[in-house]
Image (cartoon, rainbow, N blue to C red):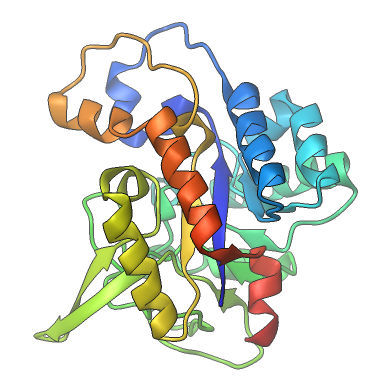
Amino acid sequence: MFNALTVDVEYWWCNEFLTPYLPKEKKSFVVEATELLLDIFDKYKLKTTFFILGKVAENHPELIKKIHKKNHEIGNHAYSHKPLYNLSKKEVEWEIETTDELIYNITNEKPVGFRAPHASITNKNKWILDILRGLSYKYDSSVYPVKTNLYGIPNAPVDIYRPSRDNISKHGYSDDIIEVPLSAIKLFNFYNANLNVPLGGGFYFRFYPYSIFKLGILKINKENRPFIGYIHPWEFYGDFPDMRIPLLNKFEATWGRGDKAINKLEKVLIDFKFKKICEIIEKY
């Protein structure tokens, strides 16, 4: 079975829990970090989906051209990385449309996939999917069927589905936009609430020992659904500046980064097969 290990191309300081502690001057290594991932993907002949932050596309168009020329899929990751549930409808429209235009101007191709920063689409702002429908997007990959303080729709399906316009945690119309949820392992239902374990990526990719991460992907594939994961370039390259931040925040931001993350990534690419999301959804 083919899976998708996607890349959210954004700056290291886009972590919401780091915002109150950021230094005035921030050194970006997004180009170097993304090129490192591109080299690893070339080594294993992987073509995947890169969700591009608008600010990165604006500041580093040559990087986006390079990703595109290597035949990876380019998706929209909004512009500023602000959680979309904190923005007005007009602001969200601007974020999506501006990034859409930036990507088109660089690649001469319109993105068909979207991922909200911080998985920040819920039933409270489900109208965002109407914006995507209006821009002819084929799929969204913003739903995480788990519950955390920052994101998550725990009752959403764990498999790829077409969300209802009335309730995005329910199946909808067969000709509607496709939702590609970030992967979680479904444990059981307790008082009509799903208890799911997040596996998708980011901190979870860095936190789990590889043996556990591998077993999780195998379990998902055994259920006849593709694993949909995500990583960030900053997790594999560069050092965070010395900041006074709470230990829990520091742990989440720095655990398992650098060479450890690279070693784990290479094991994943050896053990499993991957495709772009636009190719995975063809059968749905």
